[in-house]
Length: 116
Image (cartoon, rainbow, N blue to C red; front, side, top):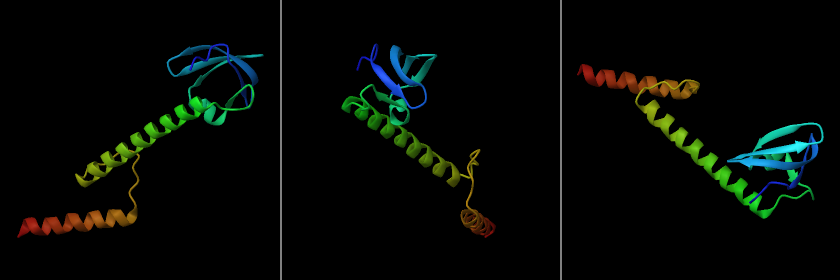
């Protein structure tokens, strides 16, 4: 979709006109300021077309972007699980106390196996 010269409304800045697009970024000129937004994310919460709607094409782009985000989160979760099974600590990953006990008991039982 070509966005240049399309009129939009922002929940805070009011009406504006798309003056440039570059990759996933849109620059919009409002009456007192010029702002850059990420497309299509901005249409999810902040922007609508001038008539107050969001076109089917934009909705489709939002759905695609959300699917990509979900896949990335899923992939990271799987990577974290694999790392945890190898005893790698992931920065920022909080371990549930019950999980920690389970991991400790597995470690202790493996130590006993090695002693035998």
